[in-house]
Image 1: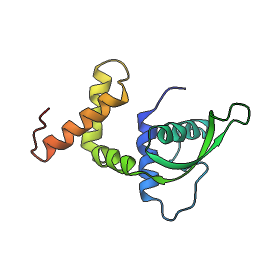
Image 2 (image 1 turned 180 degrees about the horizontal axis):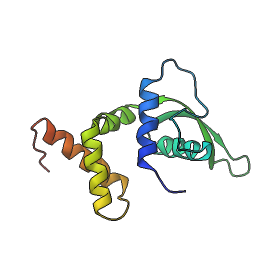
Image 3 (image 1 turned 60 degrees about the vertical axis):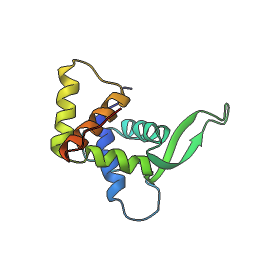
Length: 127
């Protein structure tokens, strides 16, 4: 299954707006996504450090995460969402990815989102 950054963004919004500490087995992010896709992307967000979750692991190997019970966003999850929350920023990122003709690595998308966010507030990033 391929990563779907549109679904990732929807999941980040879902957990940002969620009230209460309870877990949500299958977040309702609207139509167009299967339960399997949603659960897979929750695992990806957990592995990326963006979601606080209780992980359910394989009993045979113990280290393979089968699925997660997500609770809420981590600090990093909030930080990434802050960069891609604005629809104009998100569309710039998507247009750039589409114009490159392939999917970009998350690190590239994250750096690009940071650059757009800094440009929007008039800050120049120096390395």
